[in-house]
Amino acid sequence: MIEHHLQPERVTPDDGAHYFVGYYDKQPWSDDGSKLLAHRTSFCDRFPSANDPCELGYIDLETKVFHPVATTRAWNYQQGAHLQWITIAGTACLLFNDRTDENTIIARAVDLSGNEIRRYPVPVYAVSKDRTFALTLDFARLTRLRPEYGYPGLTDPHSSEPSPSTTGISRLDLETGAITQLVSIHDFARHDDLPEHTPHQHINHIMINPSGTRACVLHRFDRPDGILASRLFTFDTTTGTDRRLLMSGMVSHYDWRDNQTLLAWAGKRALLGTGTEKPTPKQRAMTLARKTLKPVYYALGKPRILMNKIMKDSYLLIPDQNDAPTTPFAQGELTCDGHCTYLHDGSTPPQWVLTDGYPDMKSRQPLYLWDTHKDQGTEIGRFHTPRELDAELRVDLHPRFSQDGSTICIDSAMNGSRAIYTLDIAPITETSKS
Image (cartoon, rainbow, N blue to C red):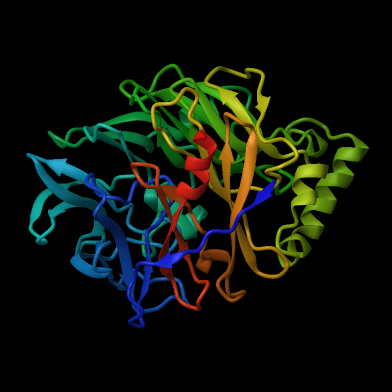
């Protein structure tokens, strides 16, 4: 791994407020590259309540001025309000989730003057690249089972059902507002031999492939032994059919490399067994050790050697096929979980992958740029994060490429408050061309 640390530039005002973009799967730059989407809050030391507002707007990247456009009461620190760009009748708009006075989560599209252009009766999660449709999920269930990704104040109406058949993933037509349920949680549960009453099932992290034809999602649940299991599925975005189980065990973050392949931090975790079959003595011992030592693991800054060397988690290229063989990615180099994302610049396969890592024992978060053509990585930064901003308050870097690939942006609290920074990566990417 090459070390070439780049200088971050803070692009949000130092005005006492806190700024962040949100999740790594959203493109925050406007089409012309002049504006960057941002959330602005007045606090960062507690989780938001259902009544806490968050300002939404954009940063003028020339003047570094934040322009507020709207306010939402449906947000969290990990994914914000799923704020993203959308164009309606030729007008650039902000699309985001909000909460009505009746405590219903909806989505709104407003122009840059704050005028509401369209309102949708359901929230959005992932939007297709051509911005014609969105996929959404049950935020109430997500709030109950993974609160840092949900919206406070929601009640799960299916809390007594392990795998409800009336809730799951729905498709929203962004032109007509038509809503179609595609896949239920029960559909995922019944895909194979998952026990009928496996508790606490939920779905998260929907991501649509570049052509908009298929999407991936995590189906998660607590095993009988208390271990959280993850299963990576894909499905047809029009019908919800042709469901494929790509990976079972542990799956964390991922991105579509192309329409047929995903890059994911994952592992089958054979040492822990399946959770549904009688474990071997070794598997029982490893399961007990994992549960017992998990607090220590977090206290030590999630040391990479435990998950990568012992549990065998790693970055894998996973074909969009049932139980297809996987290919190691950046083996022995990128050895910790991170938020990986490709720069889709027309090269085949895409040349650049951006990813980060969790804080080390010195509370520093690493940032990496990987050249897939040379099979070579560069650590481009390592940034301090306050220890008190952890767990549901954590400030992940969530790195993202600009549309032209010359710049990246990160969320960081390196100077004590949440802020957005950009880094010019041309010194590395241009050198690679020579």
